[in-house]
Each structure stands twice: as structure tokens, then as C-alpha cells.
Image (cartoon, rainbow, N blue to C red; front, side, top):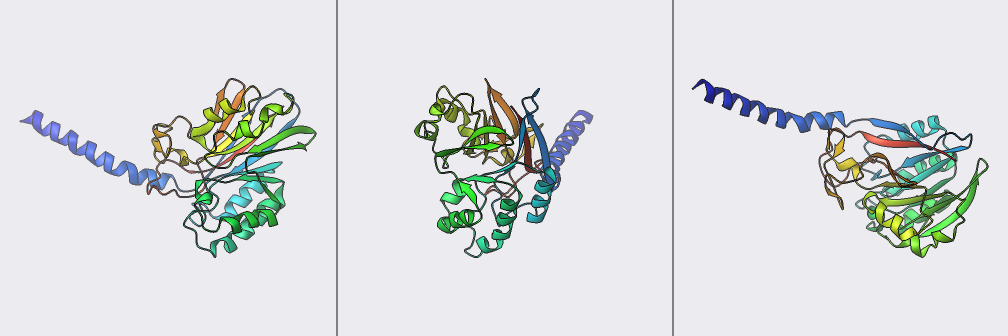
Amino acid sequence: MKGKKLKYAVIVLVICALLLYIPVGMLASKGLQTEKIDIGSGSAKSIRVAQVSDLQYPKNGVPLYEIINSIREAKPDLIFLTGDIVDSAAAAGDLDTLEPFIAELSGICPAYAVTGNHELDYKGLRKFKALLKENNIALLENEVVQTEVKGVKIAVAGVEDNNIYACADMHISDITPDTPILLLAHRNSDWDKHLEAAGGNKPYVTFSGHGHGGQIRVFGKGLLSRGGGLFPKYTSGLYKKGSSYLVVSRGLGESDFPIRAYNKYHLPIVDIYF
């Protein structure tokens, strides 16, 4: 009898723990994590990139002014917007209230952007593109531009969402090997495909988002994501394959999935040493 009571007590405790796990995790997800990431070392030359991803405006999880203040404090050389800045369900007037945020970003330093799945599904896509253009944010649609930042020559490439062949179509392989390629590609789950499409001259650093950190993080691992299934491969922070790196943002807004647990909103600040 005592053994049965103990068994039932353990079962009740486990059920209670599971019922509490998600609500506590959702509370723990409130607020912004600014994550400092270093790539390479031993060189005096470096550039700093602030990555803004998956804001899902107007479903942003962090006030816009807080994001701006955090970016200003980091003093980046470049800002990369890696898709889903606006939610596909945004109303027409939401772009008007987003405009000051876009203008503030543009005023900090040069900025580049790519589309995510939400932009491509958004009825106001044309107006969103115009908003970026008016604020001198370069929208890269399967194209690459070469520029110089703090004396470092780099190539910034960007792919439209879900185009896994863009690295081949853009002829990234034609860029001289001594010019580091920084790639903006919305979907974290497509990194391996982008590296394959790039051929011999692979991007040095790829910046992605899309997966919202796997929604529920268990022991530092993401549980699920669209396109990545259960326990997806790339969900947060820095990854390396050969001489190439991937930086994944967990995003700054709410996804269509209703639960986000143990998963703060995420602003990567990346120092790349050359």
C-alpha cells in the first residue's frame, strides 16, 4: 500500500512539474538578451555587426526603443536585417508606425536586409521595400555587393527567402578568395544548402534567423522549428563548419507558434576579426 501511495505521489509531482515548466519558462523568456559573439582572433582588423531578425512587427516582444538603445550602445559598423521584420498579418498602417524604427537603424550605420517568409506573404511587401529604400537600407534580392568597412574589403550577399540556389546564381565563386563574404539568409535550416551552392568560395559568415530559437529551449537546445523539425540543428548563437560560420538569432518577436519558453528575445552583436 505504501509503495502504491509513493508511486501516485511521484506521478502527481511529475505532472505538477510539467504543468509549471511551460508557464515558468514563458515568464523566463521576457526581456532582451544582447549576445556578444566573436569570430576569429589575432588580428587588429575587425568589424562589428548587429543582427536584427524576426521582429514580426507589430508582434515584437521587445519595445522598439529598447532595441535601438541596445544597438546604439554596441556601436556597430553594420546592421543586418535577416528577415521577418514585419509580420505577414500586419495591417497597412503598421508600416507607418514602424518607419521611425527603420529610420533610426539607418541613422546608426550602413544597413543591409533580406526578406523572410513573412515579408513575402505580406500584402504590403511593395510598401515595405519602399520603406527600406527611402531610409537607405539596401535590400539584397539574390545579389552581392562589395564594400569596404574600416579598411577591410568585404562582400555582402543576400538571398530572398527560401532560395537555396541563390549562392550559385549570384556567382559568389567569382569573388576573389581574399574578400570575405558575409551572407544574409533568413532560414537557419538552409545553411548547409547555401554552403553547397556557393561552391569553392564559401561565405565566411552567414547570418540567419527564422526558427525563433526552437520556441521551447530544453537544456540550451531548441525543441522545434518550422523546416527544422524536432530538436533542429541550428537554433541559437554560433556554429562552425570547416572555415565557415553561422550566426543564428532567436528573434525579437512572436512567431505563429503560441509558446516561447526559456528563450529570451535575441540581439546578436558579432565582432568579426580578419
